Length: 222
Image (cartoon, rainbow, N blue to C red; front, side, top):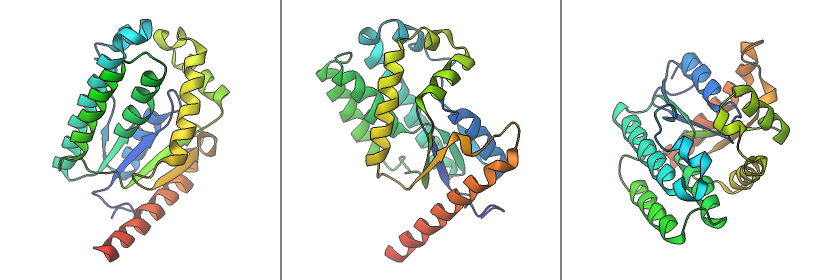
């Protein structure tokens, strides 16, 4: 247990739509807790640029790539025995991105079935530790668009805004049904890591309370 009441073997996952600030919060919490980080491999992703140019052609390839990378990270966290802040969960890949492409016709039913079967097989392995808590970052849709523009990734800026709108709504629907682990919902306007780093303290208190509460429940049930 560290000074914030967070067990040193905890796994904390940060979820939320594109541009909401997951990576920034991942770094901040890892620094506070002296935890390792687990980030998406974006810079060396061979499919990302191609995907934004042609969803239908590259959606399956991109999702398989992310699934493989995410599973490798799950295995790494397992082998280290926890102590991680994770930028985006494996659940978002299957329940939001892959499913969205299947439903809108940019991923074939056969590809989606193959992808889903692979995901389900991964979940059943011992290398798949569930997070102690999932932090869901939320904000207004306009804030998301502003952040995407500020980030300046050309492939994102040139993407049809209707894609971001659909993605934003899917995240809202998804989190309302998510039950794989405890959830802490945090509005990004509740804290300001640049102007007031201490404003993160109430968020940390929420995280600590949730983890300790659910671990006590698990101990009683075991």
